[in-house]
Each structure stands twice: as structure tokens, then as C-alpha cells.
Amino acid sequence: MSDGISARASETLPVDAAWLTLPAGLLAAGSVVQFAPLAPDAARMLAITLFCVVLWIGSPVDPWFTALLGIGLIGVGFSTELALTGFRSPATWLVVVGLLIGEAASASGLAELVERTALSWMPDRIATDAVAVYRYLLVVLSVGSLALAVLVPSSLVRVLILAPILSSMGDMFEERGAKVGIFLGPLFATYYGASGILTGALPNIIVTGLVESGGGPAISWTQWTLWMGPVMGIGRVVVVVAVTYLLYRPSDREAIASLGQRDSKGLSSRERRMLVFLLVGVAIWATDFIHGLHPLFGAVVVALLSFTPRIGVIDHEAIGETDFSILFFLGAIFAIAEGLQRTNFTDLAAETMLSYLPADPSLPLVLVFVVAVSMLLAFVMEGMAVASVITPIFVTFANSAGIPLVPVAMIESVALNAYFFPYQSAVLVAILGLGVVDSIELSRMASVCTIATLVFLVPIQIALFVLFF
Image (tube, rainbow, N blue to C red; front, side, top):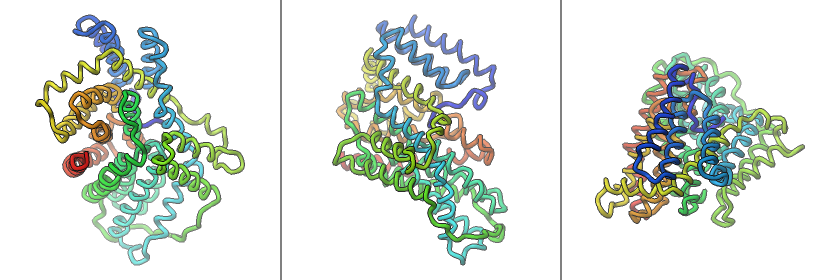
């Protein structure tokens, strides 16, 4: 389980077509080494990068295998120290520990708590009105899904926790539009709304990690929440709810099954302990302006509490069921970014980018440029691969242009967490693979939410940055 990793070949391209990307990657790498007007070490590093990116796009093999191959090539072509630099990043280990927290949250029954709470709070007067019940559940479940993004630092894990519950709750409606809306709305709320929480989305973690490793400022959890939470967290959930209601809603007020017993059973012992553990983590993250600890340490505390014998909520054997392959993917991303920076490729690319902008560009123009470049690349490259290539360039670019790095990093993460089609995100592929919605329904939902974000929310976020930076 991993956020943002390209899907398997069987889920994106036909097997034969997927394997054609292997010679394409070799051809691209060889062409760069042979013909690119770059220094030998920069050309070699760019060749390795392109080879990995092409394989991540086509996925003839699992993404972790390509990542491990890339790490090996960097070690042979440059140094062991450079190849393993990604494993020293706290952002890498934050994601890994987040997977453990997700396993514990799932085992504790936290998702069932969301369902019971939502139904128990529902007013009796609307229980027989399909439209009113739908509106109520859509809002409450979407807000609850955003709250879960604060607690569980992995989008894919949250989706896998919530999906069975949402699918079950959708069955109370007789119309397909309502079933799809109750399923997709909260899932998009926890996925897209996570842009407003540093630990909520993988793009946030990767971009801030790359900025810090590139010599930029360390962006704290509270700083991210203050700047991004209102617009890209709460605002994005509002957009998701509005889009969901626009696209998918019941039309027959009587098309609803009996809700049955809606009395809350209260918190079980495991649910109570898991909720306390997660709140401890949130408290550590929210007070980082006092202690200065990286969000990794708050996640470590939650994981340790969750797995501690007697007081924990999950057995140690569950670790063996967790997919840690993302570790290699993140290691490769950070190694590629560091390699491109050390070989001065990022300096050259930043200078080229600056040539397309007027002298002394304004902050709004730069931020719009960052969004456009990031989203265009995300059509042909996996989102995290885009981050590994473009973030170091943006760091150098912003420094050269005299632009503050904090808004650049934040707006880039927004662009990297905005999709149109399932192939762009493993989380969307996972949602599609659950069999509740088809690709047309999912693509329409993703596209409209992304367009609404670009039209309504991005200008507001940029205006806030211009006002205070």
C-alpha cells in the first residue's frame, strides 16, 4: 500500500504495450548520454532519471523494482552515498510509519466508528427522505473523512479503511447516483482535502522533504496547516461536497431502504485506545512550533503505542502483512533529486525556466507557472516522479528569482494532488479496483473537482500568499 505510485501494468497498459516501454526507456537514456548538451555527469544522471520515469509510466514491472534498479544504477554510476541518500530522509520514514498507523487504525475498527456515529447523529425527521439523508451523510462523512486525514498519514490507507463502510452505506439508497455519491464524495474529501494537512498527503511530505534537503526552509506541521488548511483543506472539502451533489444525488425522495437500528453502541476499548493514540500524535504535530521535532516523531509515538503489548490495538504479526515496497520508491525519488542537484542539472533547468518569464517576475506569476508546469508533467509522469525532478529545479528557480520558497512548495503540492484520470494516481486506481464505480464516473469526478480547485481555490490561495509574503 502506497500513495501516489504508478499502477501495475495490468491496470494501466496492456502487457505487451507495457513491455515496449523498456526499450523506449533505454533509447531515451542512451539518447541523453549521446546527444544532450550537458556535462557527462549531468547527462548520466538525467539518463538514469528518464529511464526510471519511462518505466514508472509504462509499469512493465512493479514500481518498487524500477526504483531499486534506479538506486543500483546511481550507486554504480556515481556513489553508494548518493544512491542511499533517500533512506536518510525523515520524509521517507514518515510515510513508512504512516503505513503502520494505517494498519492499526484499520484493525481497531475506527471506520465502523465513523459509520455508527454518522447514523446515530442523524435526525429522525429526515430518516425516510432519501434526498435529506443523502445530503446529511454526504456532509457528515466528508467532514469525518477530512478529520481522518489529520489522524492517519496515508491517503491510500484511509481509502482502504473507508471504502467498505461507504459502499455499505450506499446500499441504503436505491438509485445508483446516490450510491456513487456517498462512495466517492468522502473518499475524495479525504484524498483531495489532505492537501491542507502536511502529514495527510504524500505530495506534501515529499515536496517539503525535497525542499529541506535542497537547502530550503523546514516547513512545520502547524505552518502548513495555518497556510493551507483553510483553503486547500476545508475549502477543498466544500468543493468536493458541492461537486458530488451536483454530479451524483438521488431524485426520488422515497428511494431509500430502512436505516434499521441507529443507536450508538459507544466506543469499544480498542477504538477508544486507538483514538487516544491518534490524538497524541496530533498533539505532537500541532506543537512542533514549541519542540521543533519533525512530524516523523509524532507518527513514531502513535505507532509505538498502537503496537505495544497489552495497551496496543494490533498484534506484531500484522507488520508482516504491510506492503513496505514504497520505501524503495521514496529512496529512489530522493536519490534522483539529490543527483540532479549535485550534477548542476537543476541549475541549468532553472535558468532555462527563468528565460521564459519576464525579468523580476512577480510572486503570482511564478506560482501560476509552478502549477502549470507541475500539472502538465503529471500527465506524462507519475506524480512523485514529477516531484523528484521538478522540486529541486523550483528551489533553484525560486532562489534565483528572489521568490520565497514556502508558497512555491505549497502550491506545487496542490498541483501534484490534482488529477483528471485514474492512471495518474495509485489511489484513484485503488478506488477503481474496488468495483463500486467505473472509470468514466471516477474520471468525471476527478476532473470536475480538479477544475473547480483551479478555478476557485487556487486563485484564493495565491492571493493569500501574495498578501502575506
